[in-house]
Image (cartoon, rainbow, N blue to C red; front, top):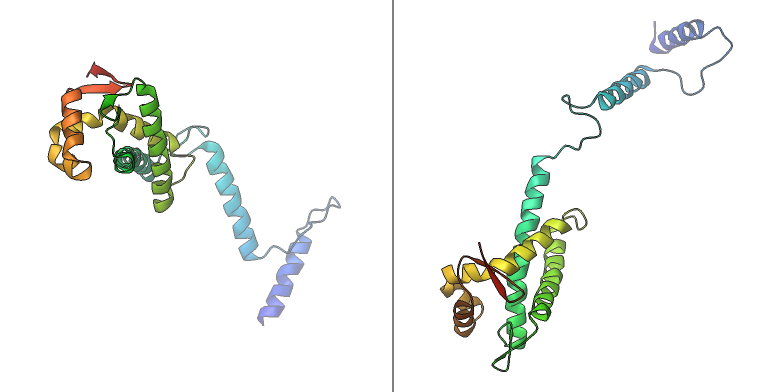
Length: 192
């Protein structure tokens, strides 16, 4: 028997097994691959409805790569805050909170300006590494805010590194005006 003859006999068998209620099947003939695809589709639907590994269907499942991407986004936010403060210092030549040697009364403005610079830097960093903007934005903002309120602690522990990044005057100002082991928010220090 040839392949065509066998295929013809298979089609005749399918027609003989067709429902006798007058409703005919619409669509392509059921070949082996179409039947297999149909069974796989049914299995996947059952699998999805039952859930994976006993977990209810509505509960999201975090993968290791998702967790790592949140950690990277948080770190990028902190790095963006440091870069933003360095850029602001290099552009203005002024220590944050000082204009012409006198202290500015508006610590809120300084914080807002630092955060704005950091958000712009974070956006550039996020685009450079193709990190999903919407899903990881909260982690980046958290990294920015944490770095903004704790950066002076790192300056106390690594003054030489920050003297190269900023200047020795900037480091001296930060060490004189802040205490280690504190959170510095809007010009106020809070013990950790």
